[in-house]
Every structure is written in structure tokens, then in C-alpha cells.
Length: 328
Length: 192
Image 1 (cartoon, rainbow over the protein chains, first blue to last red):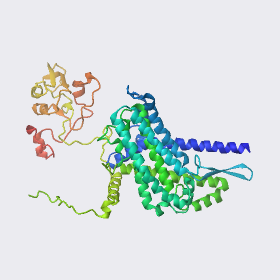
Image 2 (cartoon, one colour):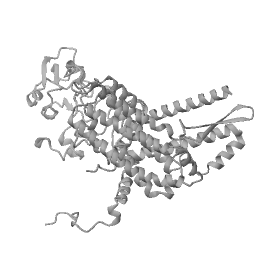
Image 3 (tube, rainbow over the protein chains, first blue to last red):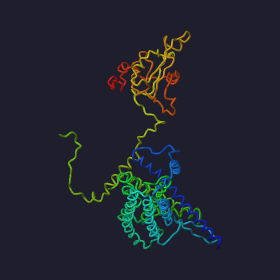
């Protein structure tokens, strides 16, 4: 018995590490994708010098960030100044814990005894609430950083970021209430499972989706809602005084947020890991590969579909950014 | 007075519902940007791909040789006089016996130097030359300097390589006019 629990634990640990690594990897390559998408939309080529197709560009950027002077202003509150980017990064990474990336992995613990491990860090019954709570905490990273800089432009940027995040959270929450009432559960896995068989929430809640995605843009501080960072009015927003990898962490946290919110949109409105004809695929795989392998392969396909959906929305974020000017 | 037919009368009518919710306009904009996403890119990746700059581009200098490989320059100094930036300097020398294969006439330039930082690539040296010895290439630039001693180019860099001769359609404006090489006629040098 202890043996099987250990295996479950190991599988879970691997899943969590994978989610963590993949989230970071996607955020890293979002910076590259952002530049490529921007270039393509403007009829340019974009970064293509570092490695084939410029694929090593994010690594080059990270190296550059590390070698920059790590400057802390003399009048700044040193500990809060360091805490700011840490908080931003922490809250950004915490959100992905409750998102179901796939169905489940089956394995045989003992003859005739099959265990099920969900492809998700943790399935809590208050998943949506958890996400909203952690996202609200993300404001602290910005606010603390802006305040600790001892710079009025940083503070102004931080206040703008905080007020924008808080105000858009309300409409975001209200947009999601409709889904919660339809599903009757706060667990994101339940919400995804209920969209099985093409019953995607987007067909039932199109208006809610538009409101949600608009608010998600505002939450991620992306154009057309980039009030906290607008270059025309504030120098750099809340991270004016930041340099080196601290600045890198702030920018990186934003890309993680972008990916996580894309994953949220995909799982709340676009059926998560569900796709049309998944039952048929699962039946085929199970009949040809056997109960356990077939199920695991079907889960893998679902996970890939989920990542496809999430990455499409990451692309959508960039697409919108290079289409719309910012609002004033 | 109306100059073009593109002017639009300002309309102050109330916005329709579709205009007020912005979404149709946003979708139109997204359509435009995604169209550009798949369009041909205008970028020319410079060091790998070089653009043809036309037949009259004035790039780096070349000291021409004649068909037998003899230097045409006689070190008369007219290019140095014509040069408004005073970039050209030379030392003349007399041709010795046995050097007939190297130099075309009895006098030649033992040293011929162009300071590429001073040169403004106006092409006056090319026009001043009575022996058709110096030309500005239309197909090559002066590359980037990384050291100060790369700035002054001597004969070793300027003289034409007989294995890789510099050729072009027309060498003078008269020739260009005869052959109707486009671009040269449209841009008379005297007016520049």
C-alpha cells in the first residue's frame, strides 16, 4: 500500500515539476513570440540572429539581464524593493496550480487495482476563488515595488496598476458568476468536465466571454489597457527604478500571467482539454493499446489540445496588442 | 479649392449601436493585422542579401587597369584637386625600364591613398580623371572600420583585381546617354 502511495506521489511531483517548467518555458518563449508576432504584423522579420530563426534570443536576453548592473536607489526601502519582483513572480507562478492541464494518468498499483492521478497540481473545490485570490495578491508585488522605489513616477504607475487591476476584477468576477451558476461548482476541473462533448461555455455565455477576456487584458496590463506602463505619460510605470534581473522578473511575471490567464480562458470557456471527437479517439486508443496505455495516450492528446488552445490565446493577446492603440 | 478627391465631409451623426460597442471595428482591425502577418516581409537581411542600388550608386573606389592589366593612373593629381573633402593624396614616380607591363604610361602613382573617413563619395574624382582610372563602384560599399589604420586605403585595396574585374554598362555620361542606361541621365552630376 505504501508503495502505491509513493508512486502516486512521484507521478504527482513529476506533473507539478512539468507544469512549473512548461509554464516558465512558455513565458520565456512568449517574449520571443511577442517580438516575432510584432515583426510579422509590421511586415518585418523579427529577431533572427541568435540561433536558428533567433530561437536563442530569450536566452541571450536573460544573459543580458543578469549582466546588467543591479541598482538599488539609495533612498529606496531596500527590503521592499527586493520583495516587489519576488511577490510578482510568486503570485504569477502560484496561479497555475489549480488549472487542469489534462484528464488523468492511470497506472496499475497492484494486479487488478488501477490508480488515477489527475494531470493538475491540485484539484481544490474552490479553484476559481483561489485563482482570483492569488491574482489579487499580484497587485501587492506591483504596489510594493512602486512604493519602495521612492520615486513619484513609480508610485504613480503602481497606483494606476493597482486601481486598474482592482476595478477590472469586479467585472471579471461577475462575468464568471454566470459560469459558476451553470456549473454549480467552483472547481475548475468540474467546469472543464461539464464542457465535455462540445458543450463549451462560449456557446452559452458569449457575452460573458467577451467581458472576461476584456478584463483579462486589463488584469495582465496589456494594450489596450496598459495604463500602468504607458510610455507617453509615465517613464516606465511601477518598474521605472528597476534594473537587471529584478526588472526581468517583473516583465517575466507579466508573461507568466498572460499564459495562465490564457489557460484560464481555455478551460473556462473553451472546454479545457476537451475536443470534438475525443470519446472516439479514446475508444480507439483503448481498444488498440489496452486500457491503461490507451487512456494515458488519450490524456496526452487532450493535454496537447489544451496547450494548443492556451497558446492560441497567448497569440491572441499579442495580436490584439499590435492591432489596437492604447486607451486614454 | 479641391486638390484631391480623398477629402471627406465631417459627419457628426450619432454613432450606431455597432459603432458604440467597438467590437466590429476591433474585429476589422484584427483582420487587417492578420492579413499583414502572412504577407511578404519587406526586410532585406543586409549582410546576406544585398540590394541592387542602381547603376549610378557611388560606393567604394576602384583604380582601373586596362585590358592588359596595366594601371591607368598617371598621378596627374586632378582627382586630388577636384576632391572637395581633400581625401586623396598621391606620390608620383617615373616608370623604369621593364615596368611597361605594370604601368600604361611613363608616369604612375607610386602611392595612392584615399582617406575613407574624409571621402564624401561625391564622384568628382571620377569626373575629373582624364585617364578613366578612378571609379566609384556601384555594387560595393566601404565596409565598417574597426581600427584606425583601416581608414586610409592604399593601392593594395584600391587597384582593380584582374581576376575579378569591375565592369559596368557605361563608364561616362556620354556612353550612358548613347546606351540609354536608366538612372544616369535622370541625375546629371553637375546639378548635385
